[in-house]
Length: 54
Image (tube, rainbow, N blue to C red; front, top):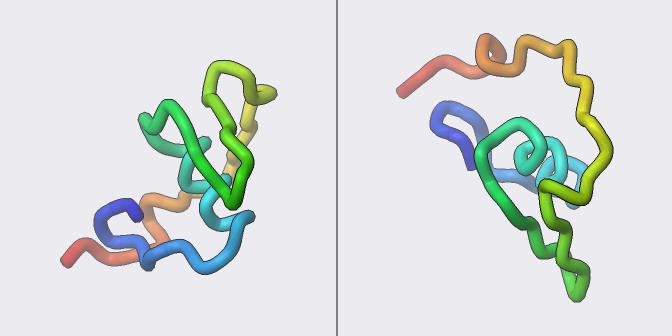
């Protein structure tokens, strides 16, 4: 998870976190996703402002 953001609960949460951060790879079940093989992730949400820092 990202500081200030709750731990991911779903595969969709994990993918969103993966695409928004500097992670290079994500494993969900027996599937390996590599960042450089993913389509461009256009995220217009200001997710950094959603959760207060602790």
